[in-house]
Image (tube, rainbow, N blue to C red; front, side):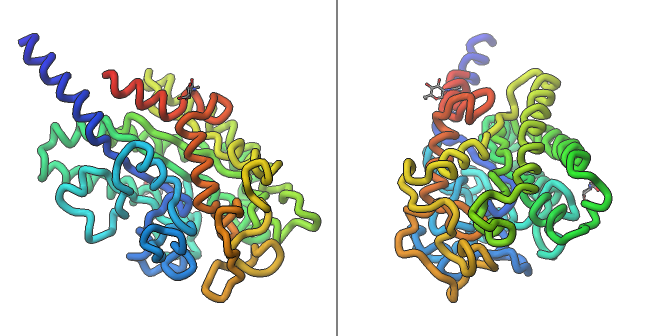
Length: 357
Ligand SMILES: *[C@@H]1O[C@H](CO)[C@@H](O)[C@H](O)[C@H]1NC(C)=O
Ligand SMILES: *[C@@H]1O[C@H](CO)[C@@H](O)[C@H](O)[C@H]1NC(C)=O
């Protein structure tokens, strides 16, 4: 009996090393192309998106090339996650994991309503449940639970609850309902429910990214900045949201008695190069590579936009999203960053811990 148990545990450890599944939830920062399958305007399915992708085609990623989930997949030694809606996501490919993210969504159901048909977060979680049923049919319920429990999960939410909700229009419904500090408390409490549901569905290691510097992206500079300074209100929103997110994750971990949720301090990672782009090999952190108007921050990145010749020297690819090279710097911090960037630990520490189970 004891031998049998040891044998089983040995197997578990081995399997975790061989192929750790990866699941991705959230918004455009991590969407690998789900919105291509939906009737929505929130999509990145045309040139010059994907110009530096290995396929040199627009894939639905909001990047010139790879995005953060791709680069995490690279780090953990697996294939990029396929969009959950991709018809190619069948058979053994399901075991790699799946990407449920959808550009435009937020914590709240009313975030991104203008994009109409997007996969809101509770629908992403419902797809995760359906995914597990499909995998069960393939490898059985026990192995499926193991695969999910041992998986790495990435959750990126919150930016759109400000940009595409509270601050979308002056006197938005949410801004009339809540003062900013109360709105932040509200969305954090809603976020907590989402994370508890994710845990209920079996997730045991979840990287949760805070928002970037919302007021410093080219789109906001174009609208609110005279001399290139970051937009005050959105920076205030990020400064309220991010510490409360970390606090909530601490509370949830304490309640669960385990470090399920790991905070990624995305704003700190961005502020490094916003403060000193040259030190990171960027010519600018204010002007988007692809766009038009001041800071190339007006409207969308399209075939008619200005396009920089060398994407590697721009921190921002389009008015809202980092370039592949900026994404690489972020993922480097996720892997090996100090506690300033990763709380309470970085991904290399997580992988070491989880491989010694
Ligand atoms: C958002 O939608 C989900 C499912 O459609 C629902 O369960 C949840 O209560 C809604 N959240 C709010 C705050 O209304
Ligand atoms: C992060 O990763 C580095 C290198 O792998 C390691 O030396 C360091 O202790 C880690 N830091 C934390 C806080 O986990």
